[in-house]
Length: 188
Image 1 (tube, helix red, strand yellow):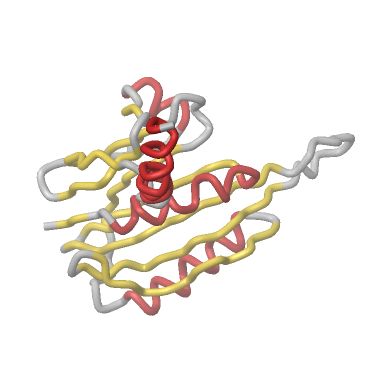
Image 2 (cartoon, rainbow, N blue to C red):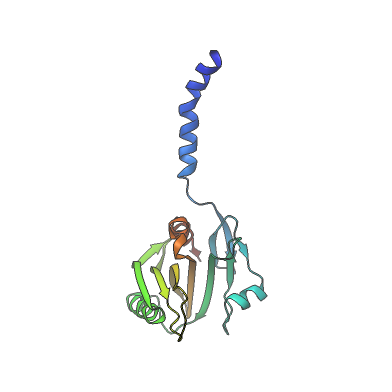
């Protein structure tokens, strides 16, 4: 009987701890990207080696870093490229990148399009779900749908692009993580 009474007193405490743990948010590991950038990388994500980056992101300009989850379906990438724009051009960049995304995909649903300050740094923010349909003759493949959260920042003559990509059917699972990752970016 004493054990049951003791358990009854501990039950609210145990429930409170479990509730707090459930709402604590995603676990991120502070990771340096070069000497001037740190970003929170989700727990369980691993850095892709150079050959993995080349296979997944074929481009003449290799990303600074790419991290992927164990299934390889969800990625976090950081890219850097020269830019003639300055950090005073963010309103124009927002329009340009939004139009570019709309032209790149068959269908785009924007969840967020804004200029936001994160850790004392302004970013162009675009969060969206994209859909690409295979229009080749005789193709009956389902559209490829992706959830993406992208942030752009200008530093000097360089544009930095932070991208979190996941399958659209896993958006509910990954959206809080993507938001936490993007809020963790620090640029010196």
